[in-house]
Image 1 (cartoon, rainbow, N blue to C red):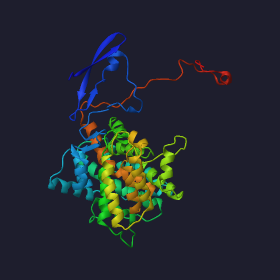
Image 2: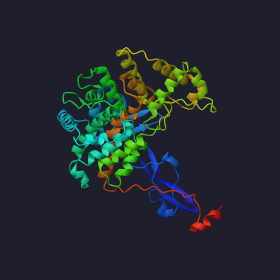
Image 3: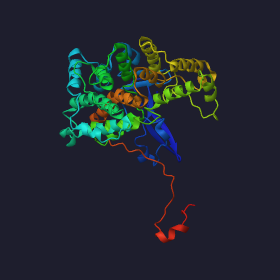
Amino acid sequence: MSKEAKLELDGKSYTLPVVEGTEKEKAIDISNLRNATGFITLDDSYGNTGSCLSAITFIDGEQGILRYRGIPIEELAEKSTFIETAFLIIYGQLPARAKLKRFSDLLTANQNLHEDMKYHFEGFPSQAHPMAMLSAMINAASCFDPSLMRGENSGRFDMHVAQLISQVRTIAAFSYRKSVGRPIIYPKNAYKYTANFLHMLFSDPYDDYQIKPEVVRALDLIFLLHADHEQNCSTSTVRMVASSRANLYASCASGVCALWGPLHGGANQAVVEMLEQIHREGDDGSKFIAAAKDKTSGRKLMGFGHRVYKNYDPRAKIIKKACDEVLGSLAINDPLLEIAKKLETAALRDSYFVERKLYPNVDFYSGIIMRAIGIPVEMFPVIFAIGRMPGWIANFKEIHEDSKSRIYRPRQIYTGPTLNHYLPLDQRHTAKPNNA
């Protein structure tokens, strides 16, 4: 195929390079378009814009494919762990036994927060949202590393990675305990990553939380499935901030803020709230399905459809199986699960949803698992943030290792008033805009 594209503008012809990825994805390189033509492109919400070249994650939304560093998500979900997958995403390859042990040991050695950070938690009101505390405390943690404060991002990257991945769950657990007025529980070296997080969330000073392998595996799987997902809102935010040469903590704290939004990290919370509403109304899902197809009803089927996937979200297939297993092992008869199954079956058979390719996504079942474990809905986006941390770090790493990287600076098309002039205060009551 031709490696160039032709553009006709104002009677002139321009040649634009065509870029092809390793999975045959194609893009027209418009990097020099404005210099050559005086034009920019307009792509509201960046739905058709490739913002970078990246070697981390591949998604084929039409085929329902997700791969981390080339490895299918299905294989990683079956055979790997969150920590091993985190290493893969950040460093580009599966670790040998010695490297995995070193990585795990670094996480254990860096899981405790500086003791002075306890006083920061005390400054938050009891009703503070855990995501607010998480983003603020990630930034605060950077203050206890003098090298970061001096702007030294290199040389200690492995240590910063270990601190951030390990301490994000410690901060998250402390934030939750603060929000419910319970005493802080410190991590234990004897527990692995996900089991330790559950210990810090649910133990009491006088009674340790009973660690159940099936619960640990289910939560670890949620972390793994969320570990990266290409250039979503929060990851793009991390890259944007990292392009300014901000440090790793500041960049990832910005990702937490972006993830907080209900259209991103809060989506699984919206699913549970929808199911609870259906249950309160005595509906089995049938009436809600009918209302969701009526644009005037104001009802929306949460957890279905995805900005990228136009097929069944591969993560949803994996998490559905895990959901059935964990509820079965815990002997929980959750009416919300039955409603969820009915919604899924109806939507997959209903031509209205099939024609619009509104298939269940990962949020549809992950919320039910977390509800079964006992994690409250306000912590759902926090769980998402813990899982997404490796992807944010890997994208930060790509930015800082690219010698050609420039600060991100999108353009815009201005639609405000034309040339205007300052008016003294006593003349403004009768003033009208120039283009009124």
